Image (cartoon, rainbow, N blue to C red; front, side, top):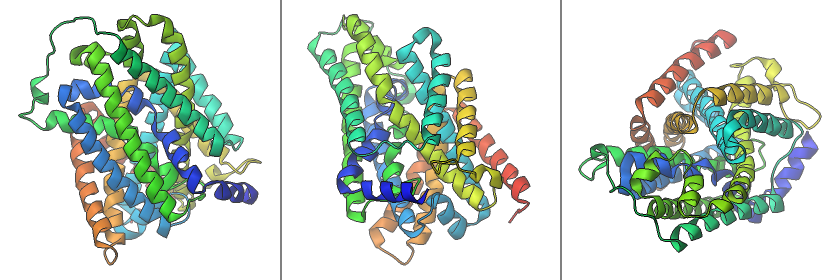
Length: 417
């Protein structure tokens, strides 16, 4: 296990930092997120994207400062636990693990829709179990492999965007924007920002890695900023391209906008090629979600909040029981809910987690640099506002998670304060 960590620490250099972050970001938020964002805000979805970007910048900064002070996996949990107390730490950890499980399920369902639309649930379960096996074997996508996956993602996006703009859109029904998403109300804009926030959440692979293989601080700052900007640009271009070809109304109703836009643009022959490319490009994102859930899970096991047996590792040094439980939970959830519903809940729970993460960083930096501390305050407020703009079902599910999770942790640890 020590040899594996040392090897990965050497690989996570400045030049490897950017693909490490991008390979975890360019996922369902970019490929599927435009549809629920259009449903929430219509043409104002791009403003929601800017709000999501600002919240992600604050969250990335907060987690980077926490990981620099707490070097073990689960730095956010450790910081919140020490600075804010046991209950907020349990709430944040419960929200984070549940969000990552839901994100895994959403990613896997989208992979299933791309590979085999008629059997997407079955493919989703197989994809999750495949990634769990790969993670248990110690697979980590780094260096040249990460660049290859980023290149594949960029190729898929570039092809879809080129087709959208190269072929004149077919006339459709007039655009209708929901009154709740009008410029007279900010609800639609922040609602779009909430679901688009999910597009940026791969930054933890760089700012707070699960294995402690941390890049140099300046590399984290440069690569983190660049990856967030690149993801925002790709998301914005994808939203504009899809809306240009489909129109805002059709985009808002599309469960799989990439497939629908190719059909609408008379490029149906390219659907299999683009679908397979997009599905393969999502595999590192699925692995990244599992790694992130594992990081918080290990912190809970180390603190006695989860059974110690979950810390048991295999020959590769990976906690196979923890990975397997997360994977099985994701498989079950993927069979019960649609990708958009899973994305909404994952975004809501993650925003709650990052609200607490920003609050913990605010206390951590109380005697430190002024601007990072103010950024943590801004991130805390933005995270709360975006979380409160999510669908009621997502908020209620998140509420259930943050009630049940701490209770179970209390029962396991027999600690209540």
